[in-house]
Amino acid sequence: MARFAVLLRGINVGRAHRVGMADLRQMLADEGYRDVKTHLQSGNVVLDATGSASALGRAIETAFAKRFGFSADVVVRTKAQLDHVVEHDPFGAVADNGSRYFVAFLGKRADKALVGMLESIGPGDDQFAVDGAELYVWCPNGLLDSPLMAALNKYKKGPVTTVRNWNTVRKLATMLD
Image (cartoon, rainbow, N blue to C red):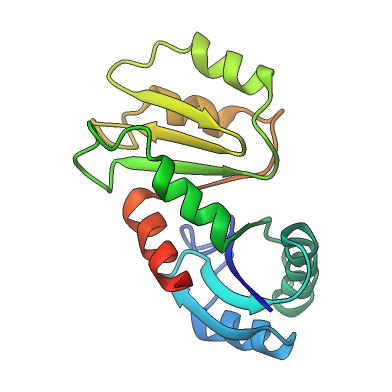
């Protein structure tokens, strides 16, 4: 068994797609995953499972839709991958507020089209860096005023993407230990 971070996209945002974390933990335990823990109400899970991250993501998407009656995209990272995200930290020297520093976890490596689109944006004070399937975005003026995050949200050609702030990323990494 290996330890994984499972990130569900789009649950418990507004009134739609509400899922209690106790219900989510129970569904995952019923599927045979072990040591299931959640963080906050936004689809952050750590658990033990066998197999690859991609197979785990597909299995959870299927079980989730069956149990809750709607689909949610799932992005999975191994403990080693999430540790790399934290260690890489390209904006550690400037990002002084973890609630305004974000990691967009992509379903696959960032391609040239996505990077080109972000480079074409007038970012204001925002900064971004790409490392494989992670996009780090420092938004010193906050998420709502971020030109980069607004553009990423509207970009429909790229892979499944789910965003977590730095505080959550670090907490998940700690939970994987």
